[in-house]
Image 1: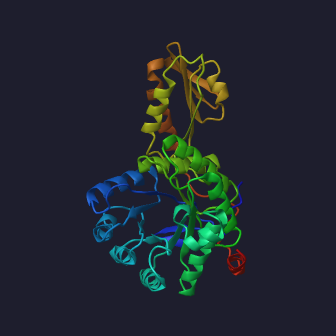
Image 2: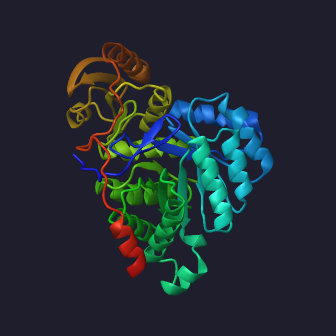
Image 3: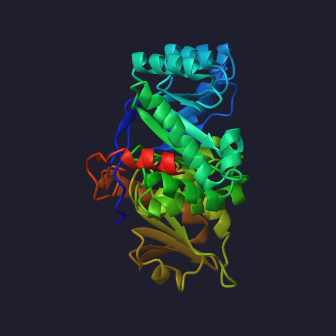
Length: 383
């Protein structure tokens, strides 16, 4: 069991973050936010996939104003992503955003940051301080010889102190770089000196294949060490894929599960069925399922059931014959072309018998810790 590091808890809408709460999976729309219909349609698809919190870009006043109309038609909280113009952050909050993502370093001077903070406080919404290696302040780039993990942490703590000086404490932080090692090092350093909740991610991770690997390594490494309170897998892809990837990372570490777990053999020369196609059909058919069932799809009737004996239910096929098995024991055989049909019927039966377990966190933590912020100031002064 992974022992999560204790952080203080904030809330984005009705979703708790930190303090031992289940780790929310986030994504970001790629539609023009001012196109309310398109954005709502995409968010509804994200909701079906299990997205807990969604972020929308706010590049102009029309996008900020659209947030209210969008929220009226969806179920999950909305975070407004704002750069450069503090007025857009204020407009988004007034329109109903459940949280703000800003970089205080590019939102304007201290007076403008103060206006944003006062607005967030008035509307009772948190602020995420988003530090990206590509937009680090010039003085920190010079001091730390580039966008190093130390420079990223120093930037984050600088911004945290700025908000705390304004008596604002509903804060979470992200430290993102496009390479895994730097991202992991930055989060490790920040986690050691603060109890603020951390939003995990590897920014600009890339296309589906490279992005999945980078995110699994970076986010997975941190989660395995107990670091992280919410996450987004950034992919150059349909954002629904980001949500699926996020849950796969959490499930692989046995932290949080949503729906069935599908296991399948990697195929070999004994495979005599279209295993790739069958797995895709099963996966697509069970997208909306929340039942905590382990399902096996195997390509060999001889070895398949035994290799997947941990599965609650599974199928294997070859040479025109399909087999249905439970816990490695074959229940019955049938024509190969009925493999998917038979499996889905059995899964439906199991779903009726099992009430979905809460896809919550497995952790020894149950309440938010409260560590001294002295180490933050020490790091800032010494770093």
